Image (cartoon, rainbow, N blue to C red):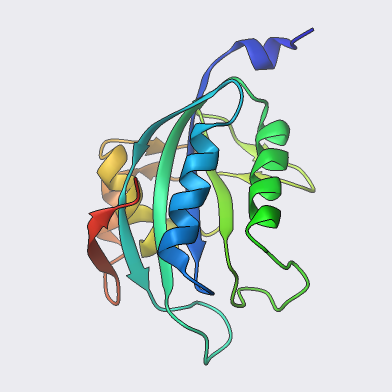
Length: 172
């Protein structure tokens, strides 16, 4: 039997990124898997963006995008599904923080909820300072108000697009 939380549909934004192997192909595969999730509909995908890595030096640039979902999955069930998609893409979680990876899927926003648990932080920590998240997010929801952080346009004004390259193609 579904819980009350599963009966409500939430608009969720998921950040996608990768810099090992063929990141464009891996993001497209991940988007197809997101579209196939139970009780979930993929309703929007940003352009792809190239960005410099945040972590250890010497790694390749990242390819990033943001997807919008409407889901009836609980935040924890969605997190489990995202981690399963990462595992199928060969994600190795034993490396350095912000190190190279085949695929990274992050719940950026889950409706207007603020979640702080051992497994999940929503809004995603650091969202306000990451241009590779904010600019693709603005394509999908330009007037979004991020819980606890404020309007997306104000966050964009404080986070210049320096080093961010929007690619000609969308992730879909």
